[in-house]
Image 1 (spheres, rainbow, N blue to C red):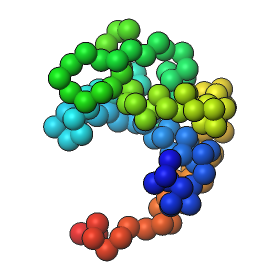
Image 2 (cartoon, helix red, strand yellow; image 1 turned 30 degrees about the vertical axis):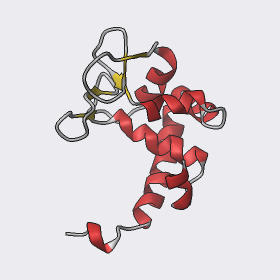
Image 3 (cartoon, helix red, strand yellow; image 1 turned 90 degrees about the vertical axis):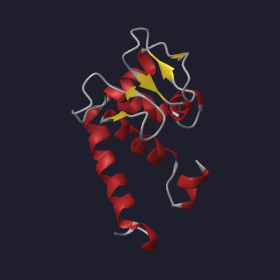
Length: 126
């Protein structure tokens, strides 16, 4: 939250940008974490938010960093993902985006545009 606040984002925007986890997966060789957040990590939709609310997440027992798994062992969430449903200021936004995919897409476009407009410091440019 502190990092996002320093960049000018509010709680709603933090939740919405976290929704980018609907795409892709973690790879142990890159982040130490392993697995996808959604059943179709190539589709931009609101499944990430639905999964946060509808699935019972348990801590994964493994030799990697702390992460959570669904009952099937196929999906994962990070501690920062679960913080979105544990925090009373984040939770209402998770509910809204789980219920309304079009609102998620509209708000994501605005928050992502804001993120892009911040640019990249000189040290991260090729």
